[in-house]
Image 1 (cartoon, rainbow, N blue to C red):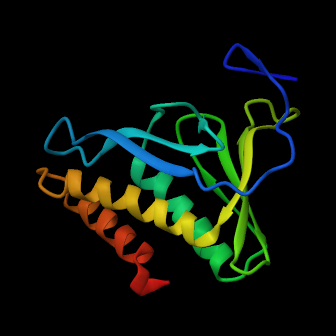
Image 2 (cartoon, helix red, strand yellow; image 1 turned 180 degrees about the horizontal axis):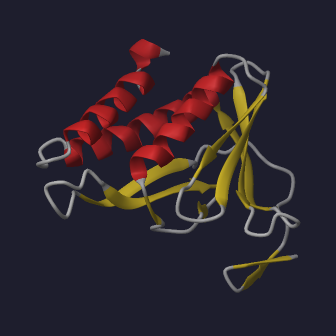
Length: 171
């Protein structure tokens, strides 16, 4: 058992193929001042019914989704493993390619607040295409929400590029 957010959790059992994995973004906000390009939101990943790092986690959505997209692309292109990060806390996702047909990816949601005690909060397997699709949907929602906000041209372009990278025409 491990303690996570003041709750004792059992270490996750062997992963099972899941279809209820989803990247989520909510409460997307634009910059506070004209010189601030910062886009904030709530961003989290649900795997096997567990929201990671937690429901409504507040973080930088563009870097978080961008590292997840880069991890997806690495796995898609044949790399055996990859990582993506949440930037507001000691949380990361570990991805490992499983060479099956169709391609599958094993995912761990990990906490490394103590370098001597990194632990998995949730684990599971999902089809690689489902990972692409849920990332695409989250990026699409983010882009749609910020497209008309003022003073964030760079963020809008980065979000549009992310949507394009994850679209079916790119895979």
